[in-house]
Length: 594
Image 1 (cartoon, rainbow, N blue to C red):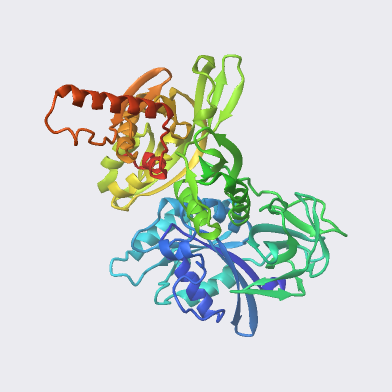
Image 2 (cartoon, rainbow, N blue to C red; image 1 turned 30 degrees about the horizontal axis):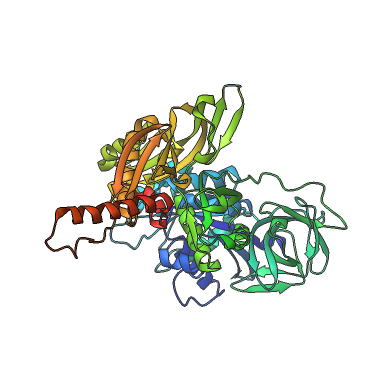
């Protein structure tokens, strides 16, 4: 019955206990036996790192008195790099449980996900979690929530996901406070795709929520965005395993298997309708993802190019925030320029390529996209330093800026301000939220936070600062292209765009780092950093020499001279034909220069 369906998600900052709470809910509704922690985080990587990377949908049956309710839970990630997963989950829900850690209080990502949920008119159920911890501050945290949401203190549920305290109250609140789906069961079918996975036996499986109408197994369905039609071979609901059903009604969350083999035919955010009685329009309000960080991904073996393309397509199905397009590089051959939401996202994609698809790849230095204006007034978007036009033709360059929010305790304000100023940040606002917690708002270039900002922020604040950002358009900036030359040859994969003020120091550090990482050859390797034609730094990797004088004991010095001259000529000839291969470590070292 449609009136007894509840669709909700759990939103929180990373590590505030979302996945543990999901376990308790599954246990209380007898959906599954919990054999180990975080049952919904089924990816090996999620288990290892203790974070949620993918959103997971699961259906629970809950009886209260004589009424039976169907609860569809979508567990979401908490890290800023996976906020797109959260936005898709929110689009398929009517309510959200907002979980806040009683020991840490409201964090930046909590606020950002909360605003996203309120923007979609979701009903919010505030929960203070980890109330059983000795250092919990439930009263102070409840004050913060009241200030943030403007709700009554009595609406806030105190719970502990670990012990199960307060979890029955959360289930009651889900049934009482979250509205049932409002769609029209008699209207033509309209279902929103919010996720998809690739199965090597069954093709692409799409997960959807029915907004209007009903879906029957075996009927012809149409994907509005791509215009393709398929037969719904199997439809069903998502428990821990997939459970087939004959038909799904309005408000249900389920899956469809229709033997789709091409990855591009299923787009997240697309609308499914029936071929015989199509709905007049697609479901609106689903935003396209905007990648923030770009990096080149190249196969180590050139013949793996097509395999890499197939692997990226399959990954994109499961992670719609990944974008990619082919590109080529002089040093690395053919590969793809990929767009990611952040550095952790990039690291996870690289790991998943290795584990799930056995792809060995080289990733170049990450950078952001710039707008280059030439003297004729044309604009060109550049994602890669190699694509920069000649400096003499450039009128000016604009770089992307962000509005960054940092929430921290008063103790760490000084070091954090120093860090942000060093990254060319401008302080917009500073205000105390409650007690000794401060919210700092900065306007800063995206390019400065791409590489190591987040790691540094965590280390100087001992993990007590939380960080979130939103794009805020482009601004003119004085940027130069820094090239790295090995024996006079530029290595395009190591070139970067950087601000004039940082260029010299950055070039010097790059050269010193590469000197340690490049293996020694039989000839000298000159490592140079250059801006245009001007060399700004140089280091030399000394050659490996054989002791040719070992056999000369005693005798005339001219004999030794002759042997050394012969060796010198050989080295010179070797240098002309020898080429320097740059190890993967060198590309990654640029990320961790400090």
